[in-house]
Image (tube, rainbow, N blue to C red; front, side, top):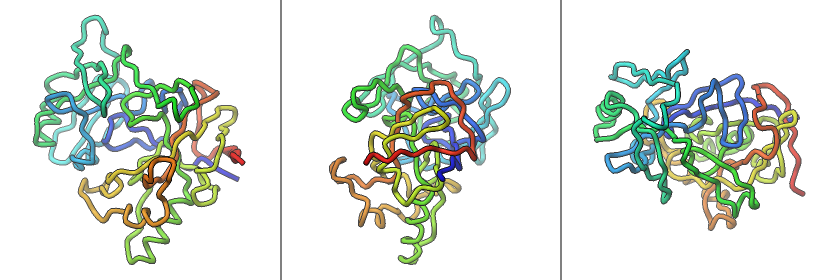
Length: 283
């Protein structure tokens, strides 16, 4: 029997996540208390997105949702609070930002917030928020023609990983004399326990009491899993182990861990830790 064991929302792209007991499934990804996954993003002075790939310290920016603000903490910094209320689209400052090769309209957060991130990262940067006029759709080659919106994610609304897949990797790391890794190295939104190792690769649909997620693309991994999320520093790269058995020809030999999903049914339905998950195999 498969069980939903973990739910994580990442309000700011590449910053720490928030572990949740329950969340709302939407076509654009997870949402809780009106806050969406990857709703904010840090950009440089030219509007290019910043991630842990080049700036691992972003892992140490820890968000917490309060009544009316998103509170941010980071080592050596005073805490910062960002209003949760949406800006007025008619008057709020906006700018064009770049996410991979996609140009998107975004709200520009205030100068105090920009100064906070600039001080912490040591380079000029700003925090931006996804604009309602922006559109970022998952690649329809993989979604089967379904229009699946997302915000500032790298491409798909929901990342699902099976707990047994990490256990298998950690066994392999142990045999190689390496330390085990926590699941946060791979930054999934949902972790499903009770599947076989890497069985998520072969699931046609996940059913969360009527809300249906469909895995559409294996998740090729960049060097980010080598970033220790507790210290914000690079460590041994698990790709060295994964490359021996997790290269996927369907993504040009990319080393994959986890599956990108889109929502087919159940917009607005709540999911919670501990609930049973139906998992229909694709064969």
